[in-house]
Length: 239
Image (cartoon, rainbow, N blue to C red; front, side):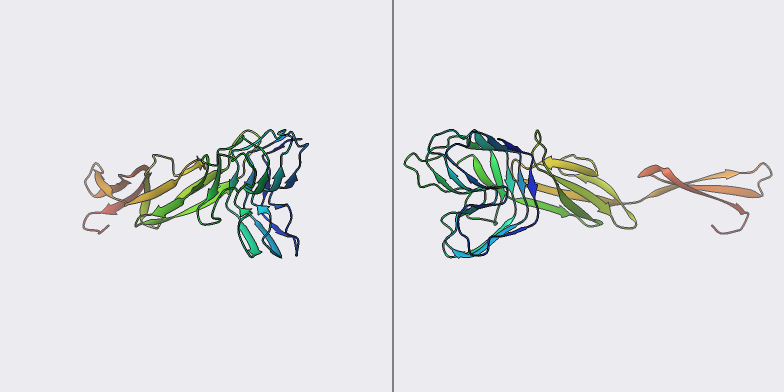
């Protein structure tokens, strides 16, 4: 059985239990031959017990038959709460016993855990492709930004959607990555995004009637040609 495109946003309270607590899957035993892919943990797993085996995606893997298909393209930004040591409390997999060579391209938010995984098997697993990433989304003067996660599917990874929101009197200019005002990015590397805003400027043009007693002033926003206002005035009347 495979687990694909699953998300968890709530709180898993294991009480005093310290064995096999995971945000997506608790325990994968020696007969597990499926995959865990494109899953997203943004909740809390907690226990009052000491020295737990807990992970944001998978709590405990005991792959003694080397059957496990793989854990790939998962993302964890949730919280692990426990007492004691963090040896087997990790962002992606809490504890691995025996082989598993296909734990790759998984990511977790920097600061939510000390490591992605840990193992006590004789054959060490290469965790170099399971990394912490940082996310920085900021706005320059003239606006603000909002951000939210987009849940993965069975074929897509977790994404971060960002929106640039200009203040009154300002307009959206650009994101430093060239994205649209609202766009999303895949969580596969460190992200540093900055939204820039500009002030509105306008141009005025005059059109006189045929007897030159009235004139129409048209003000057009140079940053947005679709935004314009018109007013007809008499001679000597202010605008």
